Image (cartoon, rainbow, N blue to C red; front, side):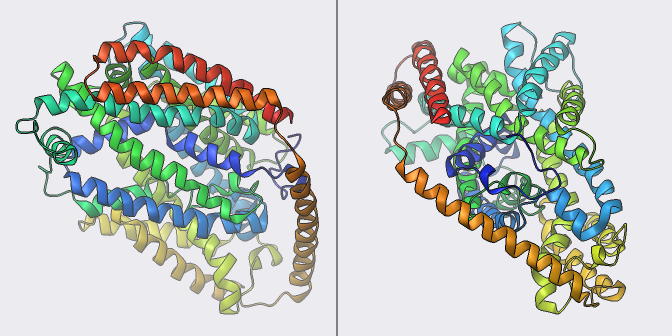
Length: 548
């Protein structure tokens, strides 16, 4: 793409196909941090039923928020979050928000690079990093190296990030499943009473004994569900994924987040918990003393190291891309590429501090909470204002540099959230009241400071420009869909695709054989060849697809 449309709507010819969004969500949310979160759920001590049911509800809420809130606004405006927030709240507000948002995304991306580095460090015999600070200079060097690779991919923009995820996502999903299957026989063998039970009963008994023990009564189903919903709230409820979904041909593409939530944040978290418990059993260690690299290595061998490295990359890439856009919005003259490199450099430095293995759950919950009020302001102005008789974009029409109604709603709602937390409400439950409070405050103060004004001429000009853009887009999409139907895959593309699927099938067969009693060492060794084969043929398939 020659233009990343940092401040203007995406042009029709640069809209992306559905497969890019399916791959992007699967790649981003089947990530190295899933090893960490899955293991931390085990450390929480919640029960098996709470995990299976809570993750089901929470991830469903997340998909619905992406599909019904974030994607429609992104497709209707074709703007980044930052450009749209500037229309609503003014350039002064966006500068404050962009700094906060960019820093949070840098920290989040840094945790992903840390996870990848936790796998690379095994190759050099560096000890596991289980504190918030690095205990080895060698680990710092590894983190810097991994960060350099990640940033080189992120600077390519959305298309480069999506293409990378498109190749990696199917294999990564399979590796979580394969690792869990390979670890199950050891857990079952160590579980008293599991022998002779049916498959589900034996698994439930092993899970209750070694994985999700249910031995901490203060954490339950609702904590799990709330975390699954808010852990990515900055992206869907906070509308940061407008940055990606503005390229979607249809708002329904937001529901492709299903692949990320139910493959990554359901299947992968559960499988990571099984692998973590199995690794702790093999090493006779506490799961809190293992990092993601060690867990994957015990379950998958050297292929596990590759899995964690790539899983960290596919998440940190789009996150650094978002951070770059946040900082670029501070000054239109700054190049997105240059700003992304700077953001990536900051991110890489953060990655040298491996707090991800102890404080990740709290950080992602806090990040979603901090950004939620701005999401509430945007949703309120985009959808509620026309129904309430208030004027959308009133602050821009009035020529205001800063929308104080938005700033006050943001600050006061977070202050109230802090008060509720001090009163005993858990961090994971703070988002709904914060969202509601921000919405009410914004409506009241905006009504008092100019939103009731009509601005007829400016509203008319805005509506005409929107209708013209939408008509041009509709005409282009109609023509593009007709051309797409006439395309046929080349013979080389088809062959490479088939061979890539055969390679994945070979990995899956090995996993099922391992689950029936194959030696774990043989399973780890056997995974290497089909994994290498998959990446060769999948990459060739993707190149042929893009060429077509």
